[in-house]
Image 1 (cartoon, one colour):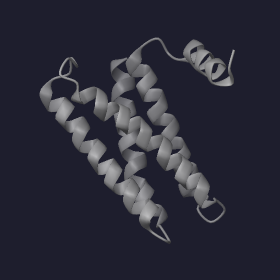
Image 2 (cartoon, rainbow, N blue to C red):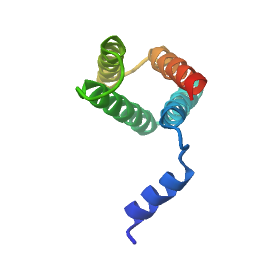
Image 3 (cartoon, rainbow, N blue to C red):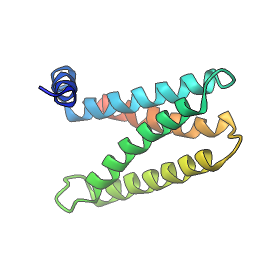
Length: 125
C-alpha cells in the first residue's frame, strides 16, 4: 500500500461521520494553524505561513467548487455566500503572499471566517 493511500485510509477512519462536522473540523484546524502563526509571528518562517495559506485556500476551493454544482442541495443564496467568501479568501491570501513584509493582522479575518463558519457547522452537525 502506498504512503498516500495509507494516509487517506487513516484520515477516512478518523474522520467524523457527519460531513458538516468534518468540514467544521478542517476549518478549525486551518484557523488554528493561522492563529499559531499569528501568535508567533516573529519566530515563524514564511514557508510555514505559505503552507498554512495553501491549506486554507484548498479547503475553500473545495467548498466553492462543491457549492457551484447545480445538484448541490444548498439554497442558491447560501451557495452564493460561500462563493463570495471564497473569492474574498482567495484575494486576501494573494494579498498576503504578494507582500514582501505581510502584516500579521491580515490573518485575523481569515481566522475569524473559518472559526465562525466552523461554529455554524458544528451547531448543525
